[in-house]
Image (cartoon, rainbow over all chains, first blue to last red; front, side, top):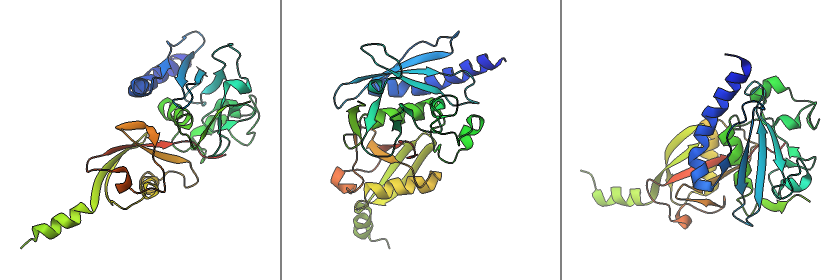
Length: 158
Length: 93
């Protein structure tokens, strides 16, 4: 199996695992773009009904972590601070760069945002800080429950 | 001879719950006066999650509400068989 086909097979299986949460929490996962190796996820905050649109690129996944990028749902602008949610506790998961600052987020690494030049892409699952965020459903839960908790969620990043 | 009333009395002070995580499920009995944070700590220990992580617990039957760590199980009227969702919100890095 070529690497892209392996990545597609992996992500298809992981999207399947997300389906109960899609029904429960209203996540909308698009069809996979097999040529770009990407798809998008739309979710909203039950607190203020803000819609968050997330583009996920999965080339080289799961050898490398997912490239997770937020898109402004109304303007289509990619990777702006306004596209990102803001947490008021539990660290800088939604980093002001902006990026998701976590070993499971490719954008946090060297060559992307350079926020964590001390992390190694190919050993992301062995990073002691990765916790249980080693698959799509766990990552989407971490995002969703941060925008669905009044003690954590602070609206959009400015 | 078993004192049924005593047994029942003991059971009334405890509750058996199940916690679902992305790494599997944990079934365990807790005192009804145990705090939500005690359940979170038990899950962290059981699955050997990172001690410096950020975690929360929700009822599967009411997943839109994050349970407050400082509150007790009984304050949420938790009954035997209640299923919880345990979420790793990502280590603060």
